[in-house]
Image (cartoon, rainbow, N blue to C red; front, side, top):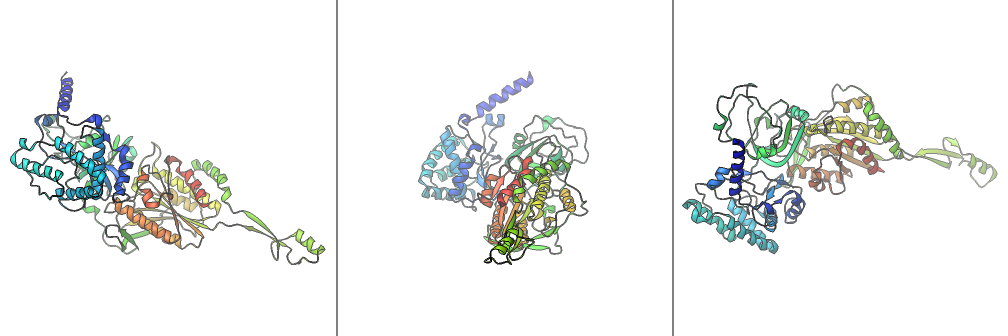
Length: 606
């Protein structure tokens, strides 16, 4: 009975405190394509995806009912950074669908127009001024949004003197964006301005495992994995020293989830819990190393302060130094990346796994058309065999030269070289099913690909790559161009393991240099990946995308033909910008990649 009364009380307070028109709510998901196009059309950076922003605590004054109901303590505000255009997951601030749609479009346009620097008010005023002066259609919807926003905001007469002064300044800035306004903050933060971008930008790196063993246990043992595209704030924390303990206080005494205490007790999971919704209730997520398996996992992007172990390693003997494109400076940084090529050690020679042999036989018949054709050339001055027809004609016809009585058998050789570059980053540990991971599919794909090309007699090489910041980019040499395919190379493929991150630009540059040495008429650079370029330093989002795009443009200037094969189902957000519209393909069912890869090669080289 007590629980039922509590549920009724919570629903009643929430309904009384609610001020938004949920019936007019507009979700972000169906708007992503339109808003991304609008953002780029108004001068926004290409290659940025559209993501939902995370709710943050605003600290503004709330009514007694709102505090009792625990609502309206957080708000989702739009902004843009080097990784993505970040918009509210749902817009339901206003009473009509038209106004909420207009708010989405206005925020998208403001993200494209607002300057990167400046204080909160000035930055938003300058962006608003630019849009009003140059786009009449946006100007009409802006004034409608201002009217709705002013009605939503608190009346300055009901606020304390200092907060009322700040509220009047915000109202003036909304109604007169061409007049500079200085905001003097009161005791409490002002009501969030839904027509403006977020007050501050967080510049941090993605929280990621410091070595290859992190997240392995969770990834392999998780039965259910939720995906969350919001970007959240995180901090590092230590795990409790002992696995068990006794709770010596009443749980009701905990007033805030954000107050962290190192309490010794077991971690118990609620399998019915929505992990993403639970994360929304936390201001900051604590991140620590824990090898215990979990039943459910949540994938998300985290902003946290850099850790000491994330710093570049100490200077070592120089390897291969490669440049990197800095899109912010619009400059190529020479010798900025250090790359090493290694070969799997102690690889045991082996044969093709039994589970792949039936598929290999099927591919053998399908790729038979790629084998060089035999061509018989008659009436040659020299050759392997006597051309009897020519010889008889020469004996009976004095006008035919008797020396042209030979025939030659020639093969029409395919003048082609292919380098396959496979992404071996830690993300390939992700599960496709309970029995299959992405890395397993990549191994099988490389095996069948190599078996198929060895029969077509095309020249090919196989490499894998991963990275850990710019000082430690690694390429694994599985097969060179001058090596024959044999059991040893099969063993190298069987031994590959995922590690670290995906600094794709450096790997493409080195692969292009290797492929450019081949004298073949056609040279194909085939890239196999499961996600976008990234590393655990600044090489993330647009920086990594632009560097990879520049490396591909360099490859094309060398006369190479780059093509990307990916199993990332969201790759359409960024691959057209990196590779071009017709230079990539997305494999919808990752388990089919081994068969699809060889057939795709046949289509590309026919």
